[in-house]
Structure formats: structure tokens, C-alpha cells
Length: 346
View 1 (cartoon, one colour):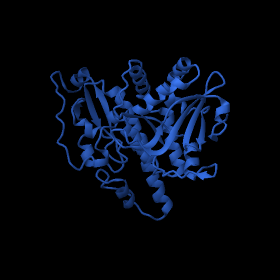
View 2 (view 1 turned 135 degrees about the horizontal axis):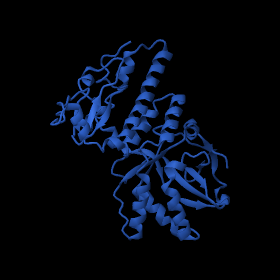
View 3 (view 1 turned 90 degrees about the vertical axis):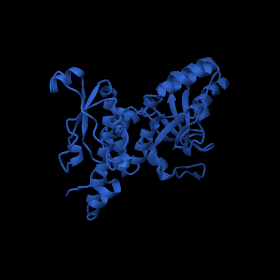
View 4 (view 1 turned 30 degrees about the vertical axis):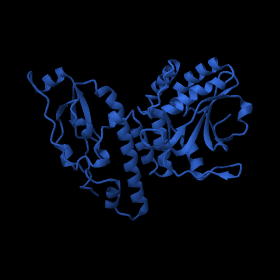
């Protein structure tokens, strides 16, 4: 089988090109396409942290099966890293694209092409390539809400077993999606300390729900006679700057406020990591209907993080549908008895 329209086709076009019978073959191919593309995107996003330090990037065509001729034409071109051409052509540039880039130093450029060598001029942009859904820089977008949002939506297209594999992989490597969160916390703490908290509608990804939690929610969990039926948009958990200001101010009602606040700040900075730690507990709350993460502290208390499910944060600059961090709390086990345990060993 071959697919000559790889570079301009969208996912549905590619899948329709392949036979629908037997169904298992078509489904398996589609699953492989989505899963491997997500992994490839994550890998290239992670490489950008190192590659952006080089003055030049060299495009490398690596697709063996069904090579795209327009991608082959870019092979070995060396273009300045800051050239805006990379904003739309940094690979992957399409479904199942295996192209990559190498970092090139000034010395390496001279060694490869001569003492007076200059980088290549960026090729003219083809309005149809990359296709619209791939016309962005996955490295620059990797630490943004947009990238995490895109992955969360893509992963929902996968069958359960492959969704679990994709989510598990994202949790293990953390990619770059969640690296901005500690700074997000620090900025809120600093502005509150200065008496100048400024909610500007900024949002940031925090974590993805573990697959075990998502499966229970997607199945329709019942608590106190109420059945929750999520709209199955995304397993992404995000936070707005407004929520963080609210959370930090909420510490005023805690017993031992200053100690508790410092404890919350320290723990909150590590939320992307411990949200998927095996010791973390996941609960469902009836009123208000929320998902609640809980992490046991060194004493008998827990730090809890209530999360609103399947909502749009209307005060954010971009109206993203996600699961939103609401606040942080320090709770005793007795105050958590009304919560229903979804996942974890208390």
C-alpha cells in the first residue's frame, strides 16, 4: 500500500485511502499513525531545547516508505535557526513524517562547505505544504497551552489500549509541556507578596490525568446518586493565573497560615510530577462536582487540589476547554471522608 498524498492529506484523508476491510487492519493502521505521530512530535519538541542554541539547523529527510518529494527536496539544506521559515517547517511536517534536523555550528558549517560558506536561503513557502494542521513549530509550541491542548485532543482519537500507552509515555517523559508551571507559581507568589496580583488571562498546562482515572470518569462515575458523564474532550488539566491568585489568597483561612502557605507553594511547584506519582490519590467530590487530587504530606495532613471537569475558563484569553485547577487546600483525613476514592492506595 502507498499513499502519494501523505504531505497534504489530513488524518481522515489518509485513513480513507486505506481499505476498510478487514476493519481490524484499517483500525490498527490508523492507531499506529496517530500514536507514532504523537511520539514523534513530542521527541522533536524536546530536541528544540538543545537545537535552538545552534546558529544553523540542517534539514534531514528520513522517511523511507512513501517518501514525500517536497520533503526530499529539503534534505541537507542548512538554514539559520532564527529564520522564520522554521516556524512552519520545523518537523514533523505531516502525519507519519520522520524528517528531523541537526544543529550546525559556525565551525561545522565551514568544515562542511568551505571557509567562506553561507547558510542556504530558505525555500519559498508552498501554501499547501505543510498542511494547515501542521503549519506550526512544535518546538516553540511545546511549552505552551496550545501544544498540550492539541495532544489531549489527538489522544482521544485512540482506542483505549493505545490511549493508555500514549498517556503513560507523556507522563514518563513530561516532554516540555509542564516545565513552565513552577514559574507560573513563582510569578503569582511574587506578585501577591508585592500586593500587585495581575490576572491577565494567562493559562498553562499542568498535567494529564492518569489513564486509570480517565477511564473511570469516561465510564460515568456515580456518587451520591449523581452520575457524571464527561464529554470526553481531553484528559488535560490546566490552570489560569486567576486560579493561582485565588488559591494563594485562600491560605488566609488556613490554620497556621504562613506555614501552610509555604508548604503549599513548595508542593504546588511540583504538581506536574506528583500528579502522576503512584502515591497520589484521586477522588471525586459531589458538591461541588469536582475531581480532587490528594498528596500525603510529612504529617497526617494532605494537600488537595480540586479540579473542575470539562469546562471553559471564560476569563482566559483563549477559551480552551479543559479540566481546570481550582485551588489548593491543606486538609486532615477527617475532612476528606465525604470524597469518593477513584484511584490510589490511601
